Image: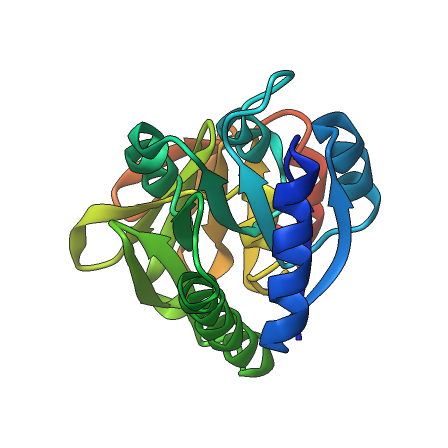
Length: 231
């Protein structure tokens, strides 16, 4: 089952999510929070698969809260204001529930989350030959052997692929993608760059040449890189 928490400043809304989760049999709702700050503290200690997240909250918006989370967590936004829908989907939300929503609409949303969760789980159990990432409102399959560079840009990553002039842009952290890549094949060499060992062409004066690009080695990553690369 998918592990989830719900965050909403309105207690009746939390009760509805609690009842619908139990009825669906797809979601293990571990906790509910009416205070976003308490939810953030919980997430730092107990990562979860899915957030039910209200957008319009007084202390911090659901959009801001989701952007602040380091984990690669699925989210279903809930709100009474339809004007927030576009921004929610720009963050690669699994779905967007406009209050008041029916159980049937709720079930449709969590079924999407279940499908995405199962797909991700299948990849983790594989030989790590592929990654699935969300980009352009789609689930994109990436061959790991095709990755020549991962570049960090604030809350997003640019995944550069060989024989593909246009990188794939996805909302994910550097830490999140490193967890999906083999440490024997990839290494972080800078706060903004991850490279595959097998595609490094040469290293000169703390500059890595790879796929026609020059990547600097950050001072805090230099010792680890040298120790592994010299082997």
